[in-house]
Image 1 (tube, helix red, strand yellow):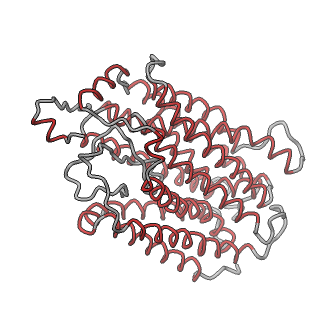
Image 2 (cartoon, helix red, strand yellow):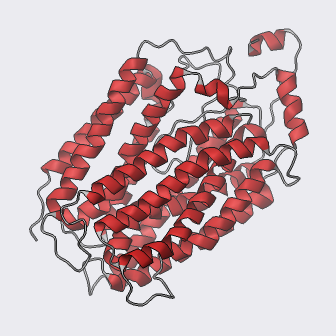
Image 3 (cartoon, one colour):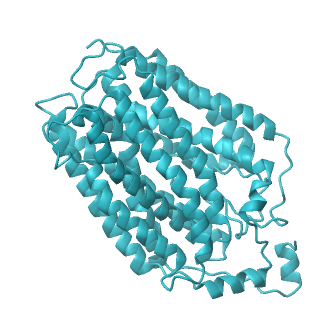
Length: 466
């Protein structure tokens, strides 16, 4: 495989496709709907299903497991099919999948955070059957939109700096989306009935309905802007670029033969498990262990998210001087510190195969999150009790969850990192691979695209990107 420098010397043209401000903006808002919905899904699904709908801990966890398993199955399948639909969609293969995803999310998500309109005083299992199809359809749409948007980056431009810029814009809108969800939730829970009740109850169903309505409204507007302003290149042009630059076409079989692929998947899974478990259980920890006012299920995650965003701003120089592996190790240590703090706080007594690769990585993430949540909910001391039943053990239990589960995942990630410490990674100019960012919902993500170019200035070629 010839390097970029060799291609320049041999006279092969290497064009840089720059995008204007409107194109960058329209692309950046293409994942806003997913970001808004993901923030609500992880932060409030268990709280809503248990405290508002009246599910037991087990049934609420089972519903989340159904969603995560559906996402885990859909993500690699959609990634594989998205790569195969070349030349079959005049609208563009990535934008077509994105549009399908948007429609599915808009149609299904409103039902997830609203009471059953055809039910009256039914038991948990019929309600679970009612909500499950909407959850599955939502997860299919979410995965479709996510993969299509991520896979579009290397197809919009050849310029590596431009790709980094698109990822930065994408992350900026992720930050804005999460802050929006938590701020709206805070205002609804604090000022819309918050003066009369300090705990989450069925009376708050209206607050969640307003929240999901605003999320879908803003997300739909952003999706329309994306489809009107983003122009996807035709497949013939993409094939011409691939042939001209001599890209190595890696298939899913090539990836499955790489041991590094599996180790990165384990690191990815562990990192996402730490982030998602804390995001899911911080609201429960706040209201069940610390017994704070219900508005804090928005205020505390908002504080955590903004703090994480500010820390991410200084990661680039730290990563430059210390390297990705040491930076990742420091993150694991900080995670351990968070787990200790959670335990010590007293309980209040008051382009070719790119889409497939990303899909395969996400499979471990979604499945591990769903399995972890259902296990945590199933072994809850009051797993079969409903919201109206008092459970004295919840305070200590959620404190233990936030202590041991993230720290256990951090230890697992550390052991995997040790196996990679002296691994000699492929040179960026030998295997033309780029690692783009995922949904950035307040977290760092690993993904890859086998048809893009790595920045030649990188001193390390490890697939760990922060």
